[in-house]
Image (cartoon, rainbow, N blue to C red; front, top):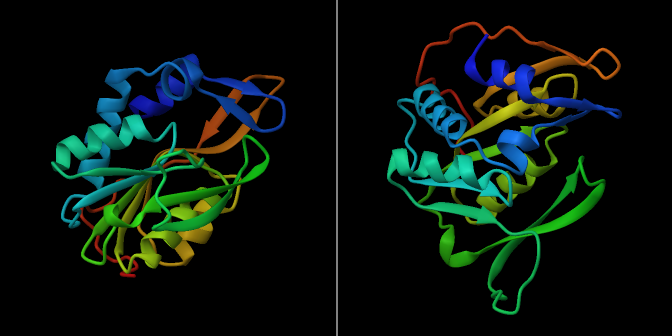
Length: 206
């Protein structure tokens, strides 16, 4: 059992409707030590993969992405979900359905922050049906950039997102993969993840 699985068992709360609350260390209050450990683990798992930009979606992925960007010494970009008065019209736009909030969001990145020369490592806190990940992939493709890999803190393995992304050829690394959750018993079963060779570059190029 790895550090994140142990933290989920200790501090996570299962809610009715297949919802895992990790507000105490990831989605509301941020445990910097856990964020740092996740950043180092992603850097380890993607060793040998060229990365010159880290991409996430607001808001919960930003903390992980920032520490990872620091390790790579590359810029971090986060896709925004809402327009502001100073939002540019010159942007890449996609759509993502939020499993947690049960609604569709327009997400965008201003064009100057994503270009065809970028090799982008996508990072997020959760992977369920893969909607957010596919929206980020779409934004990368719109810019003509390359998806270097996808790093996920917590993957809900009982949902289809991870299997779809892997079947599409993307290198997906999830630190904790939940096989099943029992709301009444407050129990979680994690998927065993065998050690894999580091720096596997067999991934989608576009």
